[in-house]
Image (cartoon, rainbow, N blue to C red):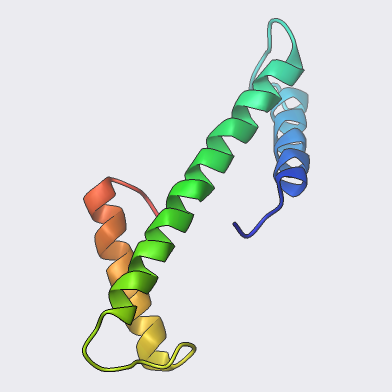
Length: 93
């Protein structure tokens, strides 16, 4: 995961505050409950992307020829396979 849980919560809190301040949403009840749910959804989404990334790494590792990580070819194959798996899962990148 690219962001820590603390960073995700901080960003979500700022988004929630901006939505409320701009009158785009009204919350009946506790804002904290909404923030907890926002954090859960973002963490779940990032976890899904992490699983796709790992599956792509395994696919590349199983290829007949070695493709050096960090090379342009590796990056291109990684992105192509990631898009394929995301589409298969109905995940939007």
